[in-house]
Image (cartoon, rainbow, N blue to C red; front, side, top):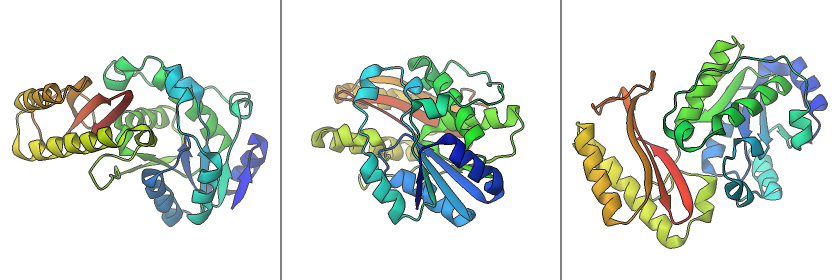
Amino acid sequence: MKIVKKSNQINTFCNNNYKKIGFVPTLGSLHAGHLSLIKKAKKQNKICIVSIFLNPKQFNNKKDLKTYPLDIEKDKIVCRKNGVDLLFIPNFEEVYNWKNKKTRFPKIKNIMEQKFRKGHFLGVLNVMEKLLNIIKCRKLYLGEKDFQQLKIVKDYIKLNKLKIELINCKTIREKNMLAYSSRNKLLTKKNKVIGGKIVNFIVKLKRKERDFIKFKKKLLNEFKNRKIYYEYIENFDIFSLEKSNKINKKNKIFVSFWLGKIRLIDNF
């Protein structure tokens, strides 16, 4: 595995090999969810590139940025063990000083993460604009846990007619059904158990209930009984992100809630 820190070096390499490249962008603190993206990128491409860049522009909360459980040395070992061909670890200047053609950003509906994390998606689009100019790739891999982000990046690629295929990868879950997230490392043992119980409650309830209004009422009651603060419980069409009161395969249920001081999001 080759480790590169300079944008011009990796850009030259990618310009000559972009048709062979699968790219997995990350913030670091790699877990099983990231590994599923890497494995798929390895399987579908001759070259797998992973980036680790803790992008400050997408953190609307400075405390969240400071407490992010980043461990670069551990991530290097994980990437090497899993057959990553090239690991890109730039600093802030290497990313944001890169000169590239300006692209257009899609309109973002003021729902879910856009509503509760002001400026978050603008930060995501800013860094994706830079990274996709530095790292020319044929396929880009993102996870479905951050579904709204996935949809926005897909819209960005389509709007700018980029020759990149976005591969969405299924959410990977821990044994207790909690979706893998770097922030899970910050949960207390007690709250991790509670989180698993909440997810299992949602999964079982979704199997039984077809009416979202009734579903939401029952989930709100569960949150109330466990004294858990939530931000949103929504049901959207997976293509249009329009609200729906029907629970079916065309829609997803999205939730955001807090376990102690840790904010989690998930979709079902």
